[in-house]
View 1: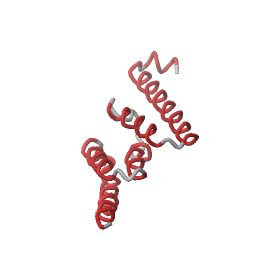
View 2: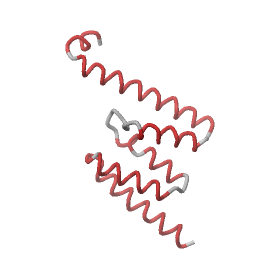
View 3: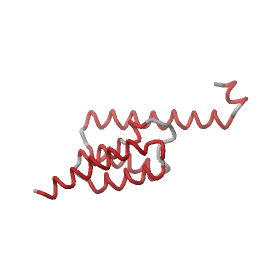
View 4: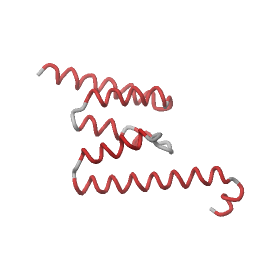
Length: 113
């Protein structure tokens, strides 16, 4: 890593930032797995996205907040988030579209009750 730091300090700093963010996500996930406190876990993800979002690619983590909103039956929040993600991260457009369909079905089902 020291060589990379000398050759390309910008890339080195980017990788360090990614590693730190991933470590924080893993800690938050572990705490959630142990506590089952979905509200705190959602707050972690909301803060992460409020502060610029993920610093690394990966469709699984990019949709974690949407999955948490869905699990909490916060469908409108999930829909709003996925639409924002679709606008800002074009590479996840197809997956976002499938989430939008899924969430709209859940909203319809909830409204029918």
